[in-house]
Image (cartoon, rainbow, N blue to C red):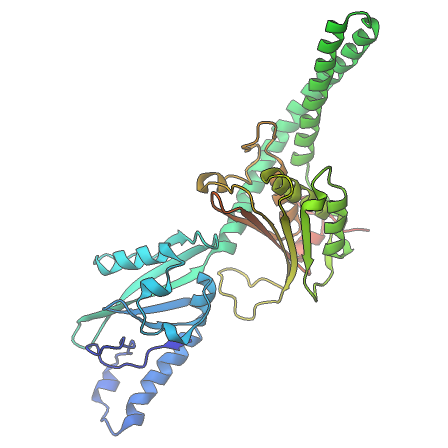
Length: 405
């Protein structure tokens, strides 16, 4: 934890926040040790908070910033940041800079508010408090914040399940009614085609009818597959093997994929078929977003269990992280919020189910998926899967997940 040691508000160095108590006021100043105890207590207090803490003096210089704050904001801890203007230190987090700038200019500070870091895609919940000295003069402010990304993703997962339950019943009924007529159209067009071999114009038209019928039938099958509950058949699995199988099975672009597997990546309890489907959909999506010959980078790494997590909600267990990055045109901010929604697509021939299926597979494995992108800067999909799935996902449940028996 980094913290300024200055003790006067008028000093050129930023002032450290002091704990004001009546007892401290009455205590005789018997020497340096009498003043050192409150400072040491405060340093330990901030160091042990599980929230990010950022204290700023009235002149805009950083007075204290703990390790959790650096971690949540995606910054590298640096002792030299103390005494520097917060706008310089936080230049990679413009959203936080704007919040702090407005906080100095208003008397009504948010008690509970949220923002999203564009750099990392994290959702941050924060509170701002002003700091006053013994004379009630304003000498700075403190930003307390916590990573709410996991909580937000868990809430969105539950909302998605509710939507899919309703959508599944409706889509299954419609798909069943559409599938039979499509099959009849394809069969009858095939019969006519065999009878009209001497009519080239009719043969071409009937060929188009058969082609479009097959395409419509494929969409119906994909919809039915999407709304059907996933029944996991879990077993010990090397994630790298699932990735290699998916790369080899690509229709095109396999040579563009660059796979990096870090040392020490453990096996997962996962469904091999579903995990290959996850890689296939993510890779296909990335390859379609780039030009011929451009690379798609895949990295598989191990994330140890956090003893003191910076995010709200239950602490995440040890995880395997999968990152798929392309160098394509990127995704706009508005579209980025909807890419996992069923039937949302920006592709002329897309069904909008590829990434929705990926998210469904990740949810079934009790994992988390997020995406970061910006126009012209490519897109990165990040999947984290627990090494040991939650017990609820290894039993038959309302989500349709089952262990291998």
